[in-house]
Image (cartoon, rainbow, N blue to C red):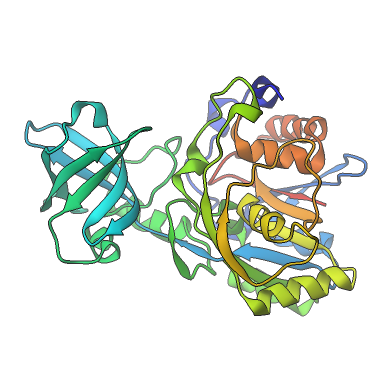
Length: 349
């Protein structure tokens, strides 16, 4: 499939720079796959489109304060994104401006107030802007990031080092049910849920199950290859425990719908449930869902509006049909829905 087939025009003013004032009062576009019908509503009314016995599957990963700033000895500013800790004090990071930095060079990491925090040495430069960096501190990575890190918002959301804005993002770029720390991007479809809305849905007989997928930096990576088949999708770690696997299997067996909240939940369910049955499992996935894929576990999806030429748009197009999805996107643009991570949502059933 040609990557160009995933392109569309979005007016820049529809890229959400802030979340909705209240999480569940963001807008919701409901798309029915069978006939392509569209309904404009609000997210807190999602229960009107769910049935007793349906199961919402949520990704409970928790986002690290993974974005940080540093200075070169020459005075040049650097911006980094923590990816993982490979050994004590040895971080893999993405570094803006890595081309100018030399292997063996020492830089100074800044705390959130802009003061010097500690020194770090660039140990190895890798492909795609990544490098290994030795941090001169005895603290674990999580503790260090609490002192130097900002929320790792995607690059289309414009942010500087404003501490009040960072405090708001720490709260809002995190789902209310997040508990397993390790992601460097939020599973953004889940940002619309509040504890009150979840409690209301439970009283109506909607089930909730949880999976964990540590969203990686690849979620921001655009498809640059001419065809989707040439694109190498990123690997991400996931897990499902026995309790949640059994719940999802029971709902599936008794005729309830499995509604994945976010593309990350979709990838977990379709990777682990390739045989139509979900085991308790911990593993990794490189599953690239694109048009032509046959879904085995997922019956519905809650998702945000995605970037052109992205793997996430390919996944949604595979689920609902690319023409149907683009018709929904055109409608959303005409109605001035807000797009991307802090934007509005779709329910596809």
